[in-house]
Amino acid sequence: MTRQDALRLLEEILELPNDSLHGGESLRGEVPWDSMSSLAFIAEVDRRFGLPVPGGAVADCKTVADLLRLLEAARAGRAA
Image (cartoon, rainbow, N blue to C red):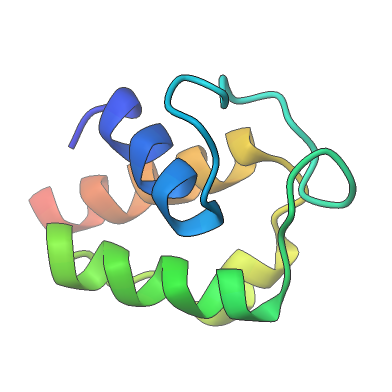
């Protein structure tokens, strides 16, 4: 999973146009993020990439970049 893969996944979940997310967007205003988005994100990351992402950690994310770092940490944990 690349950074672009993760951004495309988020765009799909949020029903945003391709290439509209770049990483610095706020989940508390710039992006239509809510509890259903969080659940969809957790489920799709597990389904597509086989990565477990803790719900509490997702809830703590404030930006798209935070979500990307969380995914990177999950990927690094799987490789360990």
